[in-house]
Amino acid sequence: MGKMILVPAPGYILVEPLDLERTTASGIVLPESHEEKPLKGRVLLVGESLVTDSGEKVKPWKKLEKGTVVIYKKWAGNEYKPEGFEKELLFVKFEDVLAVEGL
Image 1: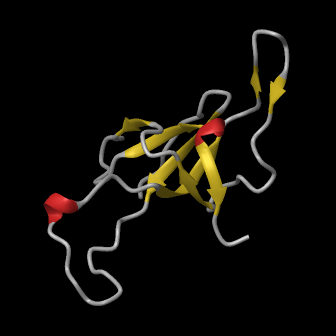
Image 2: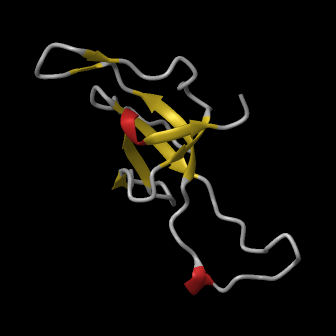
């Protein structure tokens, strides 16, 4: 990846979606038309805590940091494709992260 100068808005993380497996455990290759968007990605950047209208601070999980693999809601995120990148990235809200993998 090239050098990126972005700062996610408060309450958001920037995620690089991970590629889906195209072969099942039993060796069956799935056609591309069967693919859905991945629900798993690697965190690239973490925005600051979000301050709600009532003044409450919503912090990211302690384990939500650069390099962490997360699982997020199916329709979560706003796509963004930086110039020079092959893949689209996602801005995902803290609240749309369902789990952190491998901890």
